[in-house]
Amino acid sequence: MTDVVAPVAVVGAPEAPQVVTDVVGRPLPTFAVPPPLASHGPARIIAMCNQKGGVGKTTSTINLGAALAEYGRRVLLVDFDPQGAASVGIGVNPHELDLTIYNLIMERGIRIEDVLIPSGIDNLDVLPANIDLSAAEVQLVGEVARESVLARALRPVLDDYDVVLIDCQPSLGLLTVNALTAAHGVLIPLECEFFALRGVALLVETIEKVRDRLNPALEIDGILPTMYDSRTLHSREVVARVHEAFGDTLLHSVIGRTVKFPDASVAAEPITAYAPGHPGAAAYRQLARELVARGDAA
Ligand SMILES: Nc1ncnc2c1ncn2[C@@H]1O[C@H](COP(=O)(O)OP(=O)(O)OP(=O)(O)O)[C@@H](O)[C@H]1O
Ligand SMILES: [Mg+2]
Image (cartoon, rainbow, N blue to C red; front, side, top):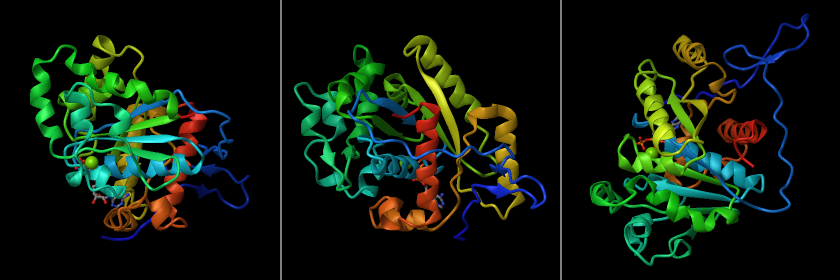
């Protein structure tokens, strides 16, 4: 894989006043470092969602979470994918655990405090998942209020966190509907590839259905371009198309394509810990600051 980092900013011609723009040419605001919080909670819940596989949902959940935690935000990562990639990526081996999110949502009498695990990174906790969760999709079908089991499970700890990030599985099934029902906002990671936009309309339709029927306050917080390669016309075209179709739902922050992300996953660390000075870490810190500036995170 090539190691390319997206320019988050393009500087204008020297004779013109220096205007810093984002990758689609919009003026790029300076997102200030968020001031420390005097107290914590209640958390805003953000679902990281795209039914397309391998677009950077888990990478973005881990690294956005770690960047917010660096800024002193108390963050809970909810692994809501039976693959358990978010758990593994933060250094938890979910296959050795007695209790995971599966037990929390499917069994009575399990306390969320008994399932939560500190990640080893300050301010960052994980609600782990493993393959057991795949059974929940089927078992939930017969449950009363089957779409809101995750919302109910998270409620007891919302005052302890500033942000809860839910790493969704690549599907629009009942687990994802649960994530959307629990969430205040949805962040859509979108790989800068030609077919990336296919499926986004269906995702938006699903979000609108959940808003109409289950969660009237649900918002789309933004579309986050991932695996952006500034050397290819192709990446620029994909982002331009997203801007045309979705306007300012397209975030200013863009995540470049770099092998440092898979490398950090192998090391089971966020990039902010694995390579703190790398532009990939800077990109997720910028995303964290942008979300705080937009009011999507505390
Ligand atoms: N910006 C990036 N540059 C290069 N590689 C990346 C980037 N973001 C993610 N990756 C890699 O791409 C692969 C897929 O990423 P990730 O697991 O985050 O996607 P996902 O949407 O969660 O996938 P799934 O749908 O299977 O859950 C991983 O190997 C990851 O390390
Ligand atoms: Mg994933």
